Length: 167
Image (tube, rainbow, N blue to C red; front, side, top):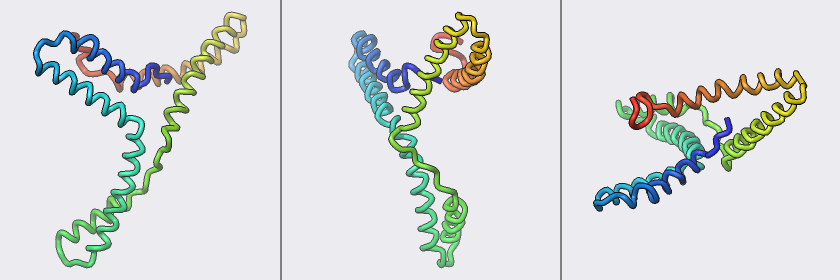
């Protein structure tokens, strides 16, 4: 699904909105400090987003190795604690490494594909207006992808009870 604005752009807009639309109207220093701290946290999230999946994958693989290595070092000790460590090393240390994404390639490719689908919809509309009925079938293919994708996205970002002020 073509997500424009991107998550980063939404967060950037939130930072600007806090600074331009809310912060100037806060009258006490505690509220102002809270708004500035909120901007800082949002900026931290923006900086973490591009590398988050890479960090999680790397940490996953490093943690399984640590569990295996520690278990092998203490495996010969006759102790309940050493036994628990060995069991953890055998169970969780045996989990297969996950692939580490590189250079945010998936997000870039996804964005390009989203724009390609957008352009395809325009072109299919042109073909339909020119009377090419095969464009109807082609549009059904695009719709069969877009509809469940949209529903999944809507289910992910919706919060029970609705938006602020509703529900």
